[in-house]
Length: 118
Image (cartoon, rainbow, N blue to C red; front, side, top):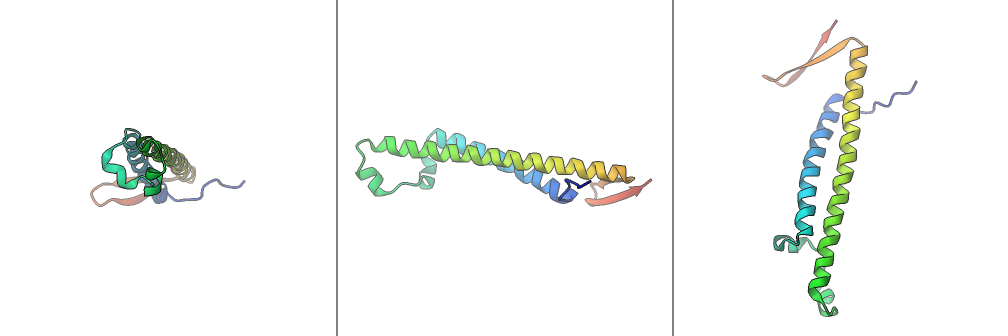
């Protein structure tokens, strides 16, 4: 039977941590872009022509703010999916090692991974 396991325990843990950070950061950026934070104006993609040729310049900028905010929320959803895959991979590693009789324990003093057979 083919295995769905394609990464090890350290890569799964790294994926989980990076996904958590990515979700927190991108959701906060999405909220700030949706609130039209003036600090983030440099990250809004507009040109001078967008302002000159439009009758309602704040409306165009606000629309771009909302679009960037939606993009941040979409990226956060992708990070949630990557985190779920990493979590499943971590669970599969633990299940595989448990069935093989290998039990892992972490020693936090040196952060080494030790195997206990038996």
